[in-house]
Amino acid sequence: MTVEEIKKGLLELSKEEKQAFILETLPDLAKEVIKEPGFMMQLFPVMLGILKESGMDLQQLLQFAGMMGSSPEQKD
Image (cartoon, rainbow, N blue to C red; front, side, top):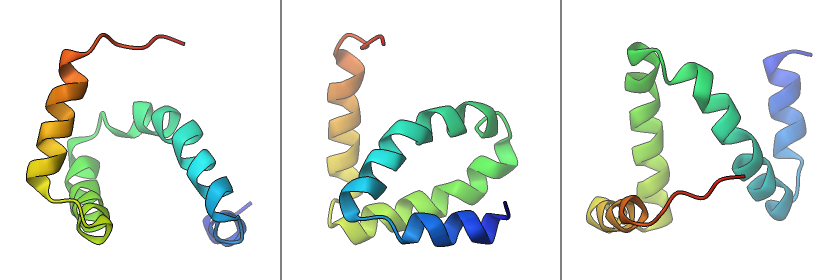
């Protein structure tokens, strides 16, 4: 399966299915790719774009991250 075929299939999912896919797969996908600093520099503008489109500003994100950092980690 090509990246384009995967992308096409994902874009055909409902909003709820897309949300579930992102929440269920992003942690697993990120484990491998975040080890490369170059990739993180490519990902950062994408994440900032998503943040901007959401209407949330960076300060709100930092406050949320601070709250998440002070709470106990959830284990599966």
